[in-house]
Image (cartoon, rainbow, N blue to C red; front, side, top):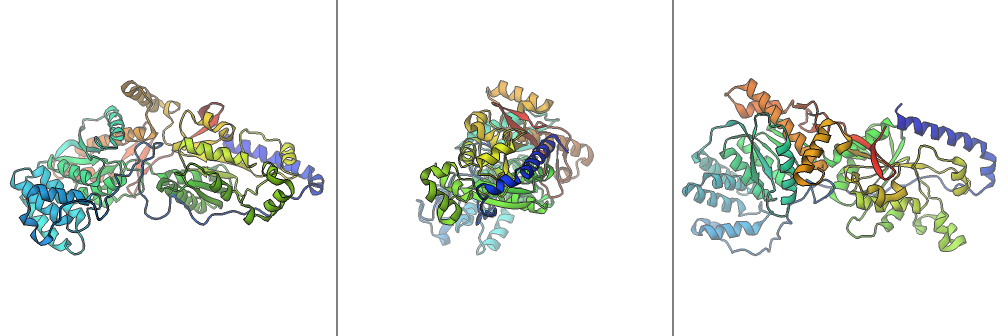
Length: 548
């Protein structure tokens, strides 16, 4: 039993003893109220198909620019006369389709532009357009395009594979250039092990990512590290498979295919949710709840948390969501706590007797001993502050006085709740923003910063010197991913020889291990996903410490 579990056991034992001693007195006091029960009909970060949106707590997580609608401005094109238009008109028509480039006639437009690029000797541009055409093919024109693209692809000049060259796909221009710049610094600080990095700009778009993959293939790269955003990653992975290029994605969402050479080299929101569920099981929390923002990251983390908790035999007794964009989370928090008078007869009766002042004295029914809030630090602090405001007892110290709790809650001992956050909570201002509500809260994060091991401290110092700011978790994960890819490439070169360097690199990545890193040891699992054990931090006073 670890220190946290032992402390909790001491508290639980004390509460139980006092509860027995106060049994007669409790019976004479106000009733405890109805049995505990709460739930929610469904919620974010787990609903539908996940996507990455801008999320400053994770640095590298973002969605690309919003797609243009079907009525976006662009020249009218007759699909039967595409060969009659000039290049500028074709470019404008293809650009007008934007991120919805899988609508006809995008594939035919890209094919015609690829032929023109090859005709003028720009095979690099032609490869990018071929990748775009393949990703834009529809069911109606897939067969026709496939044959034409294969024929054109065979005419392009193919560069010899350079076993030391790895292409790094990052958004180095456009709205996500700051993210790309931060990750580039981290990668440049990683031990290269003889690897030469070739930085290619995705511009933060799927089209840019596909073009960058084509450029990487044309320049003879043995493999790819990146890109960052979800739609960029999908486009890049599809193109990389077509070119036979192994790719280690930096996009933080589940999804890899080792057989096709697609790996993920950073943790996902779902990984975080599963790690929190394992923490709950290891620290003997039998009942758990989750309150997540209604966005893609919140949905993904919440669903993974619930699934893993149930797999581990925990009872998921509370699920809720809140709007992260409206500025007022209180109505959603009240609904999650069952504090809607129309749906809570005990609350309605209490308010009828005491009026508005009854909100300060009502004791809600809390059915979970651990509550997971997968959000960023600033909004999480606001959500957490509403919990004690509505008389939810949070574990802020190792010892809670049961007699005081009984007096406060009308004669019964309430459920004490352990708050847990993820990487988004890891910010030095959290203790100040959250105040007493976040004292004793636990934070599950891959990167402990200056509280971590030697490599974490070294990265923090070097990154600070280069940028005058501390590295984010995303930057630390990129540093480790680059270290892993470089070491794996070096090992593959020593064993594969010159026969099939990309195939050897792909096979080596499938079993890659990082003995130590800024975020600790890691390895690529059988599913092609990165696996590592995160660090657990605790809010203590005005600082974060590594939890005992």
